[in-house]
Image (cartoon, rainbow, N blue to C red; front, top):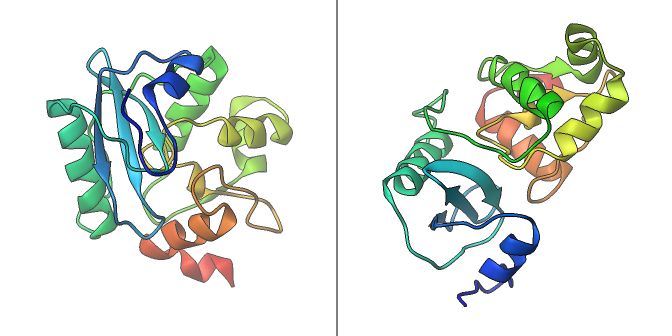
Length: 171
């Protein structure tokens, strides 16, 4: 069994219902280390740690695209995604991917668009297994930043919004 310094192991991922085949890591980003988990030819999860393991073209491409994103050279990801989520979360993820780079929406905006309570939007953001690529950081509260399930919590969200030039929304 291979593990990273933070303790993410294949056993841990299997307990989460994943049987990952491949990994690729980007150890130095504005939000800390990020690893891509690939199963059956599609990205299924991002982990906020370096994971040691075999890689493949999908994982390698995902890391290249993330590096381009962090270098401000990519605004849209073009990757096969297969998050293991409910039908609602899949619909929600598609709505998130429609929010342009550098723009934000509120929980209320998305709730209205999807016909659900704002609380459901917040819960779906928190359950997003492929943060950054499925950009839950672009969703804000009406009068606050809201939360962020990725590394660093709200501070990580602020870093991503700054990277995208949406920092003026934070003032």
